[in-house]
Length: 310
Length: 263
Image (cartoon, rainbow over all chains, first blue to last red; front, side):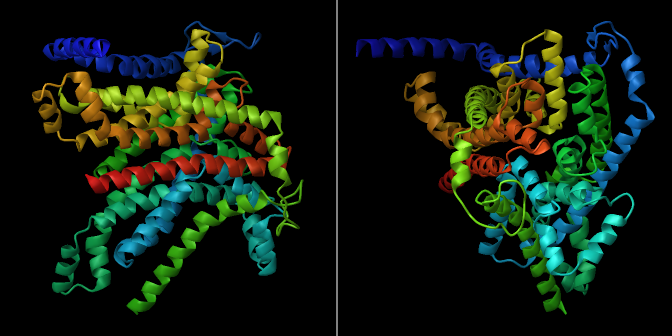
């Protein structure tokens, strides 16, 4: 009892002292978290930048810690630039594909589904997002494999001709679906689709009913209302969703490793430069590509109003 | 005309939902197949044997144990630091407040690979040996952002008049924290903690750069996908990973939803 009272007296004294010194209280609260984010994370970002000004010693295979621009020179080779271009094209295709698939489902949920059905949709979209990312990629390995489930269905439905034609197409085709850009595209869209549906859903949900009624009262046909009212108000949602699909595709290296024709992506290049090649300086410089591409993308997205929709 | 368009929308909506869910169910299906080397569909038979085999695999058990410890430690760090930072920006305006909140959420805004390679650079330059703690530091960095987001959202909805009333009644700062503020933010702490745990347990991109030769469960899975060895075990592990990440998140959303209803 007495120790309790003494403890209370002590905490009271401390809290009064802290109350009189708000700056000290702020420093105590923020000190540790700031040490972490600025010290550990900020420090790491600086280390990343400085690493790119070091170079790899070709003889010993170790990092030479003298400052040089050689690594940046190595960065802009044709093969590295083509990796960046191919990744950007895939990210663009995935973003457009996701938007095309996501829009109708978000539109249906907001406009036609009842209250209970909407809540159900919401959970059904979130469940895949909550399930393990790696497992979901893995599931497509099972589906797209030669002896796998998709081929079984295609065979039963006698659609082999269509599949063979798709696989014979240059650029998107390949020896099988799991070893083609087409298969890669399907998996990327599958994995990031919920990130596109949710912001579009949120944007459409915010369109006031009265706007639609006003449009109808003024004699607009449904298609005109859609084109002039709903669609412009949905664009910020699409832009917001596209930030996720674009950025996530740009930085991913798991999907290109497991699915596809093993042509390198930006993430894969960074991963293999630092791992197999042991060239951490070049890997660090390579992050320049996604950072700059994302910077440009965010600038465009902000002008499309994406940040108001987040 | 409009009826038919409606029907088309309805069908495509359910098709998309099927597209999102069937692959996960397929992984579950394959965890029970009797086949040990191929992915033949339909599976020739069903068995529970692989669960025992996976459990008796030392690599899998070690990886699972490492993942559990990393996730628990990163979550604990995240809850303490995230709450402190949230409390700091909650009631006071100070110079650099916006910068503080931006910097805390930066690790989840940048692509995982940038965070990963940045930490890897620091480890390399600092000559730090890879250990349990290098993995934890990577995970805690994004877990702090998640905890912070949850707690700060909850605090914004907490009225400061309760704290003032507590002070007026003679409670000191610690008593006010324990008996007034903590019960208010507890759902956010639990939800944020579970989310952080689940994401840490599933995280692979940042881990790859900070783990060295250590194997967390996702790293074990990834390496067994790149070089397929024991497919049946991989299927069982996949099922376990979904269960371990899924259950805390479901509980977390139920908690936050329930508390919003009361507020």
